[in-house]
Image 1 (tube, rainbow, N blue to C red):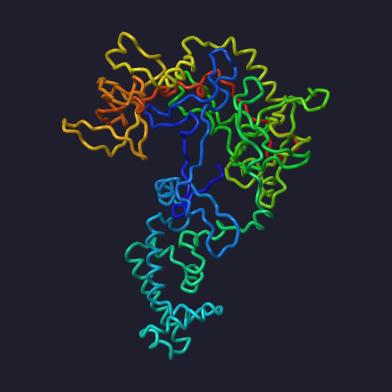
Image 2: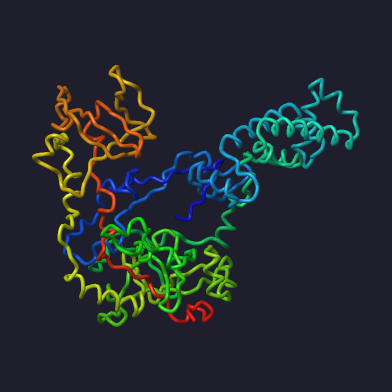
Length: 544
């Protein structure tokens, strides 16, 4: 979750489909999940709806070249950038969220080509103005073998500099005329030499701190892989965070930045209140807060959200009961922690809603490899959970769909899917719908207005109805019976756009929850923030 985006340096994509969970664009509000996660909650379990069912989001490398250390660096690392999409940046540029221009990938690519051409055509001028070492001198002498450069050699250095500046200004004028964003990313003329020599692109030049040496990382970086995700040992807790190495008492298990939020922001949208859904967003369960303030702090670092609550007064003979706390929260001692924010008033913090604060998770005793990391969520949280257990059975669970039904449908990939007409007499569960892989860039079939299905890397998922099924002979005997059928479907792209698609294979169709039908919106689902210790909450933040 710490990965930033840079359209000229994007090297990874966010993969939502690994390990059994994926998101598709649905209709009627919200998003739905393609597969069930590792925990098929049953209707009577009080943990149902209290934790996220989206899991295993991966960063997948899409351009390894952009992660490579430039030739001019002996060791170090590059920052990982993911693709937020051009519209994410364009919207912020239109609304003044960023100062200055926001170049897209195409602008950096074009600027690189212009710089390369300029260097090839003006190598002598560049070297004559920026002569730094013996290697530069050798290159300068070699460039004099070209006749046009011999004409420049008698010129004085000031004249050579003026000529170089004039030529570069012509390049800037050319790029501005083509697109001002190209000129915006071009470096100063005196930086071109260094830019080319160390293999930097204009994109990398725009964020020089995205390249750091190993020694810098050792001094200023944070360890991000002390924990891994796994099934929690705590009943009803869902997933948990587990130590991947031994950590001594007092060591930092993880450090996370937090973004401050106002509690009212996590109330369910007004247009959803006519539905039988929870009044609060599930996000509140992953925030830090305190009963005496309306501020929340959402941590956005890897695996932090999987840390569960542990008991504070149960220890076995060795003092390492697997259900007792072994870590605690504190304000970070990092140089990046904006401690001055702790002096601001509640109103100022509510208006800021920004990052800057950081929290450390610190081991309170020795932690062994494979041990689950547990902290104290606070007495207030424990009281709220106990109340939830008491009232859970009183909660109306009539007509609440069983999540295991959806899991069974998606796990049975050998089944022959029922058409819409067949579902009249043999319907699927009322809370599920069929969704189809679909690309808006399909080829048209010979039939009028009908698309021929094809799978591409840009394919998304949309709700669809199965209209017809056709069997065919397949010579590959190892294929199961589901691979001997193709389907015709009606795809709903949005409220005003649809498509009829033929030749859809079984693996192109899945089951998903209908909008507002997931456990995460369960009206009786548990909601409470993780309580910070009293001494972590400034008096200026508390409600008057």
